[in-house]
Amino acid sequence: MSMTVALPTIHEHEPLAHYVAWRIGGPARFFATATTADELRDLVLWGREQELPLFVLGGGSNILVSDAGFPGLVIRNRAHHHTLERRGDDVRLRIEAGAPMAGTSRQMAAQGLTGLVWSEGLPGTVGGAIYGNAGCYGGDMAGILHSATVLLPDGTTAEWSVGQFEYGYRTSVLKAHAAAPTAIVLAAELTLYRDDPVKLGAEIAVIAAARKAKTPSGSSCGSSFKNPPGDSAGRLLEVAGLKGTQIGGAQVSSKHANYIVNLGGATAGDVLRLTDLMRERVVQRLGTELELEVQIVGASA
Image (cartoon, rainbow, N blue to C red):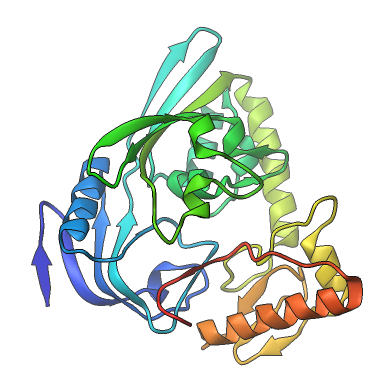
């Protein structure tokens, strides 16, 4: 059964496991795909009119969907239009929030624009990266974001400066208030700089090789825990002897201890029990409390 609102089609009881990196999760009560920022706005407004819980889904990394699914409207954001404008010595990339980070990084580097090279291979979308202040290899979103167009709870849009996101390590004001979203990112303006495309291509190749060397094969959402100050969650988990530990279909990767791999048929419950065990073991053996980086989505898992 399906119904239409504006341009996108809204489906009922859509399984979410197909759309997330872990391949885990129950169905969404309602599900739709937005291909433009306007469609995303219209779907959000429709969901609010229906008084439904809302979740905007990007690339599906760094999230764990409950086995019970999501009781409201899930909007898969695939809006990716972009424009470039020269601003003195720099270039402003205006891009919709559903654009893929890794693909955008490669596209800009090929045009001789730097600023996004660090995000080569990064799963997820521009909007998700802004939401969680994604970062790696010496860069993060806080360092390149100039401003973003956001949809506010009252249905109006506003331009937020980078300061209004209150960025911290892998967090923002949006992520800190995930239970009651203060705004939804529709599009962003990023600051890029001119550079040699051959040099940028070489830098991307180095990062791609490094990422491939440490990333386990199989279905995984990325890092499970945030790195504590001055240390690495992966190192702590490895020292605590957690590599290869398995609960149900979920296993701590033998390649990188901060990754949990779905061996096939893993449930959200398996993952949560495993993360609890990982956290407890590190506290017991090393005295460090790890903070989950993964966002839990939906009803109690």
